[in-house]
Image (cartoon, rainbow, N blue to C red; front, side, top):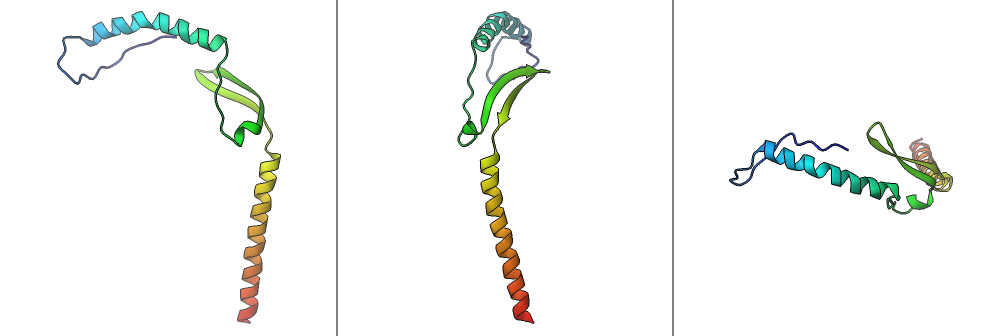
Length: 106
């Protein structure tokens, strides 16, 4: 892990320069990366809200091309089936109502 300071916005009068702050940031990068690596090596939990927490298994968190990626096996059959039943009923009602309206107009 590398920390770099590229810019500094000052909101009060100070004698500290960007170069001085950059040196301090560099000094903190090694201890910070040690703590971060230790936390990651022992595992890290990410809370997933319901209903999604029951719809995934074998989740893995990994780094790929400087991005954190989550891999999991989805189990969406029940929720998708329930949603499709709801959509099917709405479409059926819509078509039935339209057909009834057309029949009345004749």
